[in-house]
Image (cartoon, rainbow, N blue to C red; front, side, top):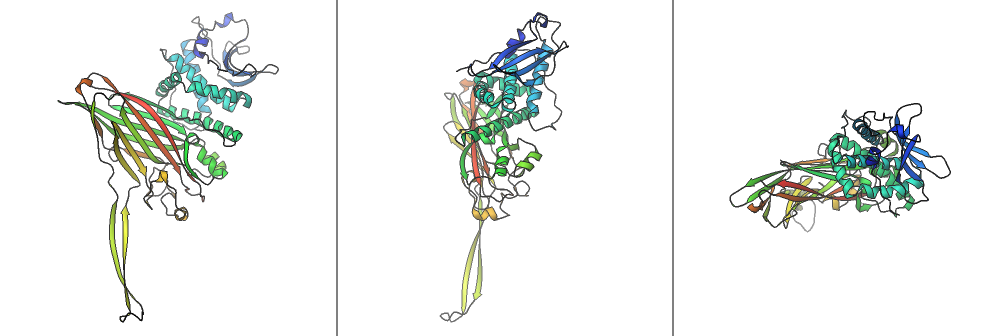
Length: 495
């Protein structure tokens, strides 16, 4: 049956001072799918022989002792206000949530980044609740008995992907900053990857993997930015050949896509119209591991056996088009050059029908000069389409829609062999790609009626990212391509 998730922040704020408690603890039911299931409660308890409190996530059963799944640091109740906790303690509890979420991740040697304080404001309750329920998901996945976690995670998933939670996520990500944000997403997506793996085993590949893409966007003066994260195991499989052995499957599973899309825009008011010019600042796409190197070495096929970006496709569209007059795009990457040379030679042979005893032969060779990445711009209505395609330098085919030939699989000089260390690699050493505006992607621009001056216009940035796996150092016939899709809204002021 449906379950309404409580407002944890409001509940804590409305608790009576500790001097008015009639028992040593107070509990709030956080998740329960049916009356026959154990209750998962948030419990605040007095620490024995201490003036401090601790917060706990507890599984309550009918006939057996409760199981403590998570316990916070101790906190001192407020002595200055009528509330149980003052603003400083609430902020410290919020930081406690974040620290324990990051603790479930594999990155233990991160840079020193200070945790932000949770200042008061209209969005404070939503951010606090989102952080708590994210921690609650991880506790369910890692700590709760199977019959409890399976029942609650489905409800939590729907709750955390609701409109209200997504808005709170955007605010939280900005509050954390990019470094903590990446650690947060790696920790959360590691838990999701583990959970999906368990569910797939139970359903014997009959399970439809839930989309776990997280993206957010912000608009500021002259800049649009979209940031997104998605576990590789949650991307849709477009094509697959053969089946990976266990070690290779482990390596491919425990990665996620991390991508940043940055656009610069400029508004120019002319006599006849307004020009809105947008150009690529930076498109970055990395495939990062979710577990540490020692685990990849022990259980996986090696750190270099992973997916790589093979196509990125973006579409920029003004959502209200009645004042748009035209759209223009820049040039795409030039077509590959062909250099044709003719080699001629004379072969001496004894052939009775030929009185000269000579055979003349001529050969022709073709050399193709091809960049691994090709960029194309196109127009659909008032939508500007930007596409980056990776090509196989051996045969010129687009990688995302093809497969390596058998000859290429055994050829140690194929571009996709040692693709992260070769001098001619099409990726960064870490296995990602960076497209900067000075090399890939000239501007696109819309001409807009001058009646738009003084208004705020809305654009949709829609995108698709393809990841492909071809064997790197391993000997295997397995190859596959996965795809994900996202949509975000950005804004600009026409002035």
